[in-house]
Amino acid sequence: MEKEVSKHPINTLFIIALGLLFALPVFPSNLKAVVILLFALTTLIATIKQGWTFHKGFFLTNSLPYLLMIPTLLYVENLDYGFAKLQTMASLVVFPLLFAMFKPTTFASVKPHLKRFLLIYILAVFLLNVVPFFYFYLSNPNYDLQGILKHFPTAMVVDTGKYEIHPIYLSMHCSIACMFILYVFSKFKQKSIKILLALLATVLVLFLILYAKKGPLLALMTVSFLYILFQRKNKLFRPYVIGLILLIGLLAVIPKTRNNFIELLTIETIEEGAVTSTNVRYTIYETAVGKIKEAFFTGYGIGDHNDALYEGYKERGNEYLYNKELNAHNQYFSLLLIGGIVLFLAFLYFLGINMVYAIRYNNQLLILVLIFYGIVMFTENILEREDGVIYFALFLSFFSWFSRENESAQ
Image 1 (cartoon, one colour):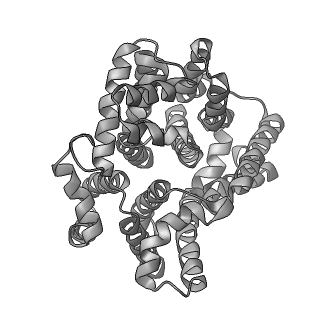
Image 2 (image 1 turned 45 degrees about the vertical axis):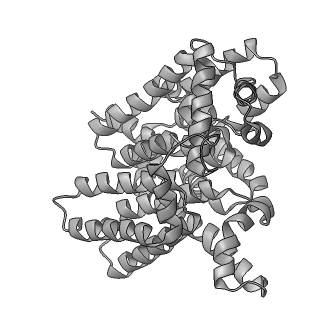
């Protein structure tokens, strides 16, 4: 009976809709919502046809941070901004809600396609980087290769229309795609596929070096090292180690990335030193800590948290940060500014409980994703930008769903 249900036509449609979600990077911004809506409709139809089910514990755990942000609207002045931010971050409640509706039979039909979903995302990220690069290279005769390499990250922000994306999020896409390649590489026996995956990983690493964003690079190296430890009894252990050493060597040899990491050796405020990305963040963090102390328990609310930070820039007389209206550039600090210690602890609980289940059921993909995002969040507010929060919510909900179903099977 279970096999018959897993072959139900609606499950086929559901798998297609889920595959489109993993292909989201290649969709323009105005179509991303359509893809998510298609997935939501497919989920609702499957639930109606196969019998209503709802895993309350899964939903509450994975949507808890978002649910706790809503009451902070009660004490904010900038309600419009608050509602706009909640709309941007809606993936944090939408994906847990949808995945909480899935039945065990749905899991049985999806699990065999896991490799395909990961490959779809890898290919989507590859195209997101390679196609615009060659387009700009071929359509700008005034630039040689060196000129394109220099201006490409900026072009992706200002000249790509509905595909506009900041290099930090491109770097995150490339890093996660490389993580997925590490995972699926050993799942294939065909040499041709292994060679293709190695080539894709090489190209993505080269784009990572081009963007030269320290946070995703450090997170990728950490996650890669941990995954290599998982494989220490695997015959791929040595090739993985060689690959990681080559990556570190490239970062040390190429001036742009080497200089970015050298910044970490001399960290100071921008009032005292140079205006580098590291010093800017350090100055922001210093300001954020001061504002957090002033509203430690309640925060400033989802509408006023950035305004409080801007006020902190003004109080210290830092016109550079004040004029640029820079956010906290640290998701943990931002959560403390939004909802105080309660929201911060709820978020840590959300991450922690997912990690516990991931370790218990050897859910390596969830472990890697949690560690990667956990590290990147020290330098970026990824939950407050659509390019970050959609994929965070999708991957956390999808991979934690695997842990939930393994628990149910015990």
